[in-house]
Amino acid sequence: DIVAELVGAQEHVTCGDFSDKTVLITAGPTREALDPVRYITNHSSGKMGYAIAQAAQRAGARVILVSGPTQLATPAGVERIDVTSAQQMLETVMAHVKSCDIFIATAAVADYRASHISQNKIKKKDDELTLTFVKNPDILKEVACLPTPPFTVGFAAESQNVEHYARQKLINKKLDIIAANDISREGLGFNSDQNALHVIWADGDKRLEPQNKKHLACALLTVINDRYNNKKTS
Amino acid sequence: DIVAELVGAQEHVTCGDFSDKTVLITAGPTREALDPVRYITNHSSGKMGYAIAQAAQRAGARVILVSGPTQLATPAGVERIDVTSAQQMLETVMAHVKSCDIFIATAAVADYRASHISQNKIKKKDDELTLTFVKNPDILKEVACLPTPPFTVGFAAESQNVEHYARQKLINKKLDIIAANDISREGLGFNSDQNALHVIWADGDKRLEPQNKKHLACALLTVINDRYNNKKTS
Image 1 (tube, each protein chain N blue to C red):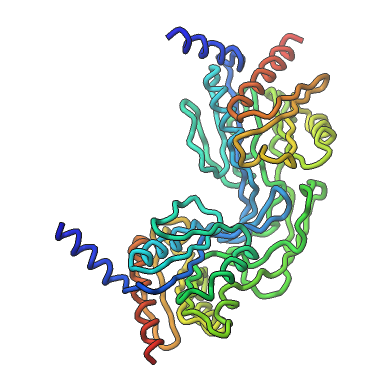
Image 2: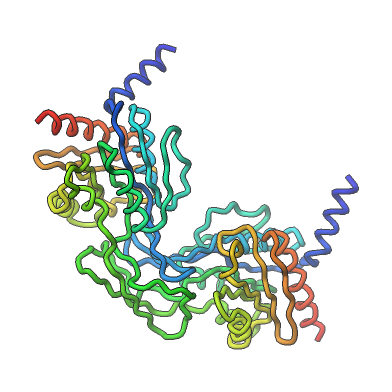
């Protein structure tokens, strides 16, 4: 009917036009093994990345979703590749980044992995256990530092000095946009269906108020579309 | 109909008669926070514990299931209490153990927790990160060492010297039964629907061959029922 068509058209307009664009998205947590049984991970549910993947696909993009372990269903029409560790996520992203126009890194990649993965289960012996971790590859930075990088969007989940850390990350990693969220705000972000984002770029910013992640994904894509077109024509 | 009744009766007989018994079961992994975002956990799905809970409830028991984070539905008629950390699991078990006849500890409790939980997200600064962990409470041992303990069944997930470690655990923790599984065996145990168990007690043992966890739960309950009656009459 006409109403549905109008709503559909409006949604399409709201999220921007992504036809002829390939969007590469990372989502979910990564898992870093300590031994065959134990691992370090984080509270990322993957919902934000999956919502962006779905919205981008509906807005006409070819979407490749590189996903850490989540419980979520693949959005219709999205090409999903499952990975576990940060190292695997890096390799998969690097294998697909050259064909993409926009890279959106929503995954909560583990910053560190165990310096040594034990082949056998670590026995509980001592009262204290000390583990050493080494830095994982910085996927976002590696993509943004390519000779001809795609338009690159990062995320910053922070619990304090949110805007300060986000701007640092934008500059240090040479990103086009960073979307910051304050994980100390009750009921938003990790594992929630709601989130708010402070979207920041070199010479501007926009606050996206608390809302359902599906609507938020669309609002974020609108900003990305604007900035992407602005960069191309400048 | 008659066939269903016979099948029902046969299942009932196979798993033992648990009417008038209260069975307390722990299941799933625990999560030990490092900061507001990161945690250590393990690959336990909770399937084995949930299968035992369901089989015990069907065999007539009152079942209290203390569960770490899982994606599983609560079996019908089972009283489920959700917990996150080992410390919470201990407190919940201790609050219910006095009213129970049998305690079955299937949960993969994290052996260690961070010696300090950071209030804010740990920043990625140094190339190396060293974290110190302290031993978690040993829930199984604390239950088995009570003045009047319930009949206590432990689990041992091992990747090497399975029987040796399991017998050590049986003796050290003063358990009535230990059910050992070899996590190095392909396609069994963690996250799988299949498992095999080597059930060991002071003066005997029984090998339960690889099978669906639901059938295995019933076979294990049969052994528990036998040993429980043997202990009461000896």
